[in-house]
Amino acid sequence: MGTLSRIFLFCLTLSFARSGYISCSNATLATPQCDQLHSNDIQIANLQAWNISYHPSLYTDRCNIARSSALSVADFIANFETTEPVIITDVTDNQLFRTLNEKKNLLDSYGDHMVKLSTANTHSYDKTMVLFSDYILYMMEDQVTDRSGKDTLYHFGDNDLENFKPLFDQYIKPPYPSSLLRGTISWGLGGSGTGVPFHTHGAVFAEVLHGMKRWFLYPPGAHPNFDPNDSTLKWMEDIYPLVRENGLYECMLRPGEILYLPHGWWHATLNLGQSVFISVFV
Image (tube, rainbow, N blue to C red):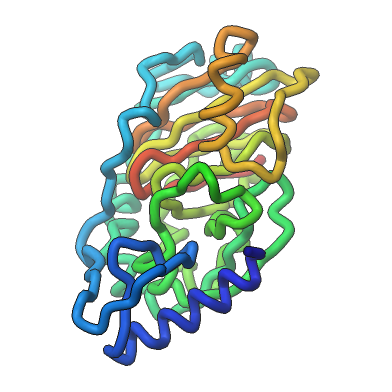
């Protein structure tokens, strides 16, 4: 089923669910693949908190990316800015921003705004607009391996900088010249097991606010083995065991940690639990 068909069925199902006549039980509205509809079996989403649970197979203790606490500007420029990735801690305090990004706070403050979703494949061809509360409550479900990246809808980037400005203004960027002088914010949310397949772009600082994010990296000049339309979850199941020891960098990123990627590094992402995250592109 194509993305547009999925969107149509999602909207149709959601309209019935809101009317009180039907809803999906033991199924996800975002797929949407509701095999059975029950008038008296309504599944209520948790309005208060993100569901940060995840399947144990998504997690790893493996981390072969450099880490640095309170990394100085001089050390960052000398050792990492143009050469290699690094996970940075203890350089900013974004606790207020994390609080504003709690599920209830986002629903209360921004639930009635529209957001743009993209397909979660390498090139993000298809885009559509949905009500933000609908995305949070009904579409941030767990990814399944038989749903491709091109059939998964995901909010990252294409942010509404006008209506969400009070939120974004509270984010404290990493304290490095490239971030402060020319950094552009890109913010997103995704369900557990979602993510983006391998791709490249300019340098970026990426921070997790809620949940966790697993990163897979290759240096410039590498040729990752992946299908741009498959999900990262599918790649991890089929390809990862074959390439794990062949030049692949990886690590888990937790709330308050910032991953810096220099220009041109290949990377794929995988969210563990419902995740909220923000990047500063430089």
